[in-house]
Structure formats: C-alpha cells, structure tokens
Image (cartoon, rainbow, N blue to C red; front, top):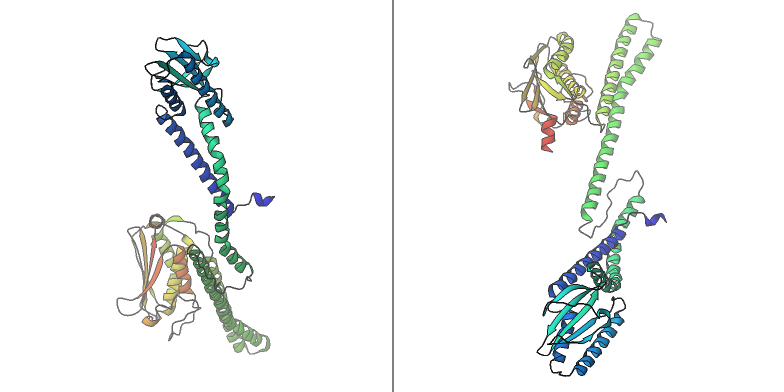
Length: 461
C-alpha cells in the first residue's frame, strides 16, 4: 500500500484536475445562485407561475371556477415538485377578489396573514416556514404564490447537488485522456532513468538520448554537461596521479641509489656525497608530497573560514620568514604597502598564495636580483602583486604556467611544477583571480592577485 502515498506526477495531474473540477463546480454554484438572486423578481419559477395563474384568472368571473383553476394549478405544480424528490414542503396559493374576500387558500397557510410586494418576489415567513412569495393582481383577482425554502444554505446545497451528477459523469471522460497523456509524457523520463540505471559507475560516456520533447531537452543537456564535467575531472585526476607518480619516481630512485651507496661504500668522501644527495632527494620528495597534500586539501568543497585580519602585518611577517632564503641568494625583498590593511579572507589560503608566489620568485630570480611585493586595497578588492627581476616567462607559455607539473622551458632551477597551480587554486577558493603579466621593466614576471571582499561577492550573486 506504500505506492498510494508515493509522490507521482500522474497522480498529481489527476488531483489537479479534480481540484479544477471542484473549483469549476463551486464557481458554477455561486454563479447560478447569484443569477437566481438577480432574476428572482422577473424570471424565477414562482414569478412565472404567479403570472401564468394571473393571466388564466383574468377572464374568470365566478368564484367556483376560480377555485377550480387554483386547485388544478396547485395539484399540478406540487405533483411536478414532488418528482424532484428533495424540495421542501408544498407550493402554496391564495386567491382573493378585489373586495378582499378570501376565495382560495392552501391548507398550509390557512389563517395566516399573507402580505407581499406587487409584481415582486419577497422572502417572508409564514408560520414556521419561509417562502419566496409572489403577489400579482388583475381587475378581478389578487393572487399569491409561495414556494417554501430552507434559506440560503439549502439553496446553495440544492444548486450544488443538481450540478454534482453531471460533473461526476464528465470527470472520468476528461481524466482518462489527461491521465494517458501524462503517463505517455513521462515515459521518456522512465526510459532515461532506465538507461542511467543500467550504466556502470565507471561509464561516463555521453548518454546519446534523443530528447524529442522540448521540456526534456534542458534535463538531458544538463546530464550530458554533468557527465562531460565528470569525464574531465576523472581525466584530470588520472593525469594528476600519473604525473605525481612520475615526479615521485625521481627522488625515490635517488634515495634508493644513494642508500645503496651508503650501505656499500667505505670511502668517507663518497659516503658524504651520497648523504648529501640523499638528503636533497628526501627534501625534494617531502616538498612534493607537502604540495600534493596542499593541493588535495584545496580541492575540497567546504567553504573556507573567513577571518578579518591585518593583511599588511600578515604579509610582513611572512616576508620576514622568507628573508633567510632570499639572503642566501643575495636577493632583495621589498614590500610596498600601507601600515595597515584590514580585510576579511581565509588566512591559510592567502598564506598559500603568498608562499608559492614568493617561493617561485626566489627560486627563479638570479642572484643579486630583487622581488617587489605590493599590497593595496581598492574599492573592496584586495590587490597583491609579486614582481621579480628574473628571466621572465615566454609569452606563449603564460597560459600554461598554472597547469600542474608544468615547468618553464630553459630554466635551470629545480621545482615540482605545482607552486603556481596551488596559488591559482587558492585564489579560486577565495573567490579571487591571479594573472601573469610581463614586468613593466621588460624583464621578469609580474603576478597580480585580486580578491574581492565577501560582501562584494554576495552583492554580485
């Protein structure tokens, strides 16, 4: 029985159609009631009966003939009324001559004072029963015709019950084609679902599903785009793993070779040289692993934690840490920044950008060169630029320097090829951008980072 409570588009269409029928029924009931109230003085059954009776009596002069006409009309109308089955009471009649003499009265209102409004229908109470009462007259007679009713709720119920049967008969004939159309309409969805269900988890090839209906095309296109993104992601991850394995192979091979030398050699000089090579290979491997872990951490989907800090102080502190490596290569580190720059950002990600850009500059700038770090805040955007006096990067390689494991051709410095990729990933996680341009002096590189404040980012979304 659980299927009764499961959500279904077809069932929803049926319920919507039922609701539409119910609303249409309610609107028709209201319309017929208002139409009855509007025409009750001119076209209601009581008014028509009273006027017909008034015309029939216009040529009658004798009381006994008038009584016969009244009695015949009363029996005929009430017999027809009885055939309806659900109408309250009987239609009552009263006849007087122009002198006020009572000629005919229905037993239900005998002895009651009857007053109406000439040529209009009014709602009156006679005894315990309410009537719609019509009063008409001619030169010889005064006629009253009263139809019993039980108030507005009864009238609405009567109108509603008279409409419910036609609606119930019509509903299946309307529902059937709509139900079939809805079931046929979602058939392509079932086919698409079955095709996806039958695919293995490793199969990310295009669906190849022909969406004939315009409503399905956006869904199929979105699925195809998602599969294309997943294929690209899997290809990138596979390439990343292969490249990482290839990069780790070199330091591991060096470690193995030098460890073998250390275990076999008895020459102190040879052992010392092997130890130095071993230490260098271990450092290189550790650095590569650290960068791989850092890159993997940035691939996460969790939103980075924002902190409002003095970015200028943070930058000065990191430059002080990098000063030792720069001094070893006789490089000058220059910071151009206001005394204080308050800004909200993920501190670890900013430090990662700064660290990798500085490491990259220090590694590739010739001895005696310089690295200029500029920090400023413009219109809610934090601007960080790192400009060096190194050999620079050929224009044709500008678009490739941020790729993983890419190394600029013609350089002698040893690197993993991950630093700039990590910097770009960190910028993207912060909602920022990083761009490589040529140094205005014509030599070296200029990396410019732009980080929008979270308030600015939210206003752009």
